[in-house]
Amino acid sequence: MKFGIVVSEGPYTHEASDSAYNFVKAALAKGHEVSRVFFYHDGVNVGTRLSIPPQDDRQIQEQWTALAKEHDLDLVICIAAAQRRGLLDKNEADRQGKDANNIAEGFRISGLGQLIEMGIQADRTVTFGD
Amino acid sequence: MSETVKKFLYVNRKAPYGTIYAQEALEVVLIGAAFDQDVSLAFLDDGVFQLTKGQDTKEIGLKNFSATYRALGDYEVTKLYVEKESLEERGLTLDDLQNIEYEDEDDDYAEKPSIRLVTRAEMAEVMADQDVVLSF
Amino acid sequence: MGTLHTVNKSPFQNQTLLSCLAHAKDGDAILMIEDGVYGATTGTVVSDALASKSTDVTLYVLGADLAARGIDAGRMAEGVTSVDYEGFVELAVTHDRVQNWL
Image (cartoon, rainbow over all chains, first blue to last red; front, side, top):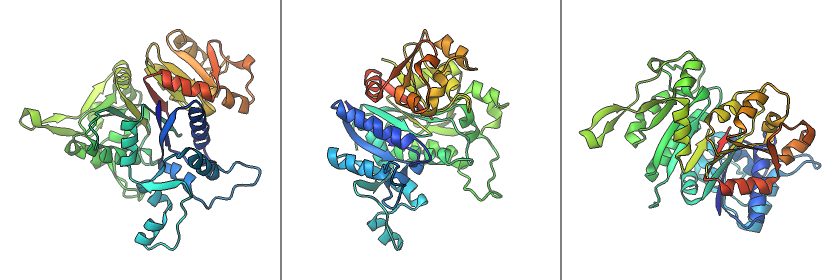
């Protein structure tokens, strides 16, 4: 079965991104497909490569990046939500005249249409938020 | 874009301005309209506050997006289910909500109300009749 | 068949669990996750609401979130089944749609 996942809260403050990660891992382990993980609202903050959590804590962004690499996951950060919150890839930073970018490997920035498309294509859409 | 037509329900259970959920939900609805899916919006619990008349955000400095609900008809988003019990619990009636209409192209573009007042039991039926439920 | 509902809020903080209970239809399942698992404990102000629905709706709780919060099986309300993440995935597969009460 094909799953689409929405993550709508940021890391550390909420458990949502951890729950989503555990759900995706379990789904993949059972042989299901996860067609896309869409990060919206504060969920976009999961995709910054600049977070430095304490060493004895989990590294949420790195967990997602590793999982994406292993399973070829499509991790999509909503551009509208990302721009509000200061999440930029190189293209967007150049286009907006910003002096830095911060998107982690394995994530890509795209439009809200990707969320709708995911809902159309997936057999089940599951949202983790607050 | 896709020939599949699914029933999408956007569930709004939060009040506007205190958090961004209502505003960013509306952004999804507007983008989603381009995909020609069968779209409905549900307003229940504090979500009914999103539709009230007379919102004025000047003094708090936030964007007033309440007029956008009245424009949804232009995007062919015409089914706004509002839960009667949620209104009543909050001391509201339909008269406290904006007048939201759409032009029915199958009926000589007659203006018709987009808001459909439903009971809690009817709202449960609406929710159970969907393919994709996105909650905000 | 039916809907899998998830609830991630403590019922002592807001009305989300009660709203979910009021909208779930016969044959649906409700899975309590994150802070929602506090709703699955026995002897609380929402116990009656939960019990009155438990014949029509199947109630589940995510074991990992229970354990994290130190809630042992003895404090769980009658009629609530604990599942792991694999069970969560299975519930999503066996129901027609997932509605997340945020």
